[in-house]
Amino acid sequence: MRFRIAALACSLALSFISFPAILGAQATPLPPGTSVPDSSPEQSELQTQANPLAGIESDIEAKNYDKARALLDTYLSAHPDDARALFDRGYCDDAEGKTAEAKEFYHKAITADPKQFESRFALGLILAKEGDPGAREQLQTAASLDPNPPNATAKAQALRALARLIRNIDPDTAKQALLDALKISPETPDDTLLTGEIAEAEGDHDLAEQAYRRVLNIDPQSSEASAGLAHVLIEEKKYSDAEPLVKAALTRDPDDPALNAQYAALLAAEGKTDEAVTALEKLYQLQPKDRGIARMLADGYAQAGEIEKADALYAELLAETPDDAELEAARGQILIREGKYEQALVLLQNAVKIRQDDPDTWSGIAYAASKTGQYNLVIQALTARSKLASETPATYFLWATANDNLHRTKEALEYYELFLKLASGKFPDEERQVRQRIAALTK
Image (cartoon, rainbow, N blue to C red; front, side, top):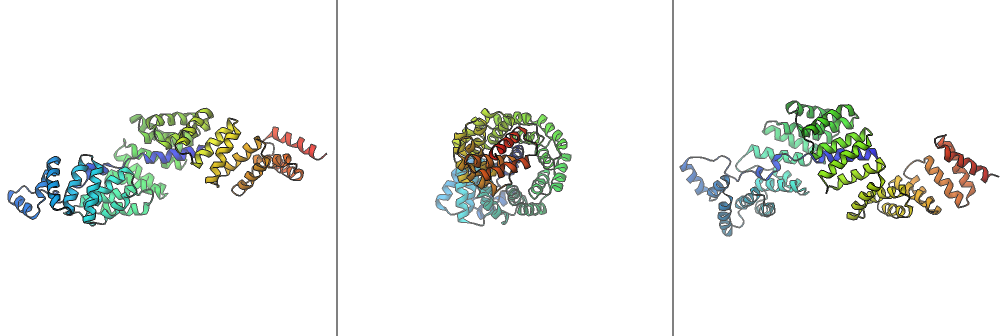
């Protein structure tokens, strides 16, 4: 349980590390032709003649979005398939946070011109912000195209956005995208931070640690680098090195969700259960609708022996997702600790219908079945468990007592002996009972 809390907290901490500012709406590339405005009236006239959208794009550059939107609507009524105008129209909405409308125009622009960089990039940014899996396709396509007019900064932004989006699911491709971005633009601290995150995803802790320390040398206040370095150190079980990093960052930013998750991970890894629960409660207050945090807190309550609180939280989570095998198994184990064996059996048996590969769930079924006198079910559960994990003193004891109650004396005696051999004095009360029972059966 302790490992699970730590692993979940570390994962959660990394998930709170936000996309850089390039994913904001205002990072959408300027409309084509507006990147390098020319102040010459003669040149402006020539540009307007060559490009009927030039005047509208000047309004967009000046952030006169309402005027540009009205002019674009008129223009698009006569030219509905003009990809450039469709992108410009989407940009007006995007810049003002009207993402649903912006997405519609970007999609239309891509349909009109599948090779248009600007709409692919802009749509990819919105989808990435929304957590839409379609973001990868748009950003990857954008990264393979060229802006019009050529714009190395925008191209590098697309490559960086792609790298950050897929850094955990495809670190090799992310690394190459970042390298391609660095070929056309200078390295920034965000790039170094991203290098660390990609290295972590690849399991290269040494490189990740170097990258995070480089960021902290430049910006000692970087919460993201502190969280990343702490995560690496926790993975390497260097808890004493990780703790001052996290505490210092929390002093600067006490309500940062990533840092609070990181602190909870550290405390759980150190076995400081009560302190970990306190940190998780604070995190839950900050993010009350986050199911991942709620699950960690429920696990923390269970580990700390706060059974009623754990049960209540698991029950709330199951009300939202009643077919979650992990949650059913977790609450089933809590109900066993509360002595509610029949209720526990319902949840645990539901859990194994969905997921049969958890030996702890089968152990729970065996124990609850034993407590309710369902000895054939005990044997069935232990048989299933034996295919997944080695026997323990507890399982041998359950094998023995189930067979004993089913009047299978030979099998009961064999399992009682196996229990005594494996227990080796670790369970004195049960061992005494077993010896007494062996004596009774062998009279």
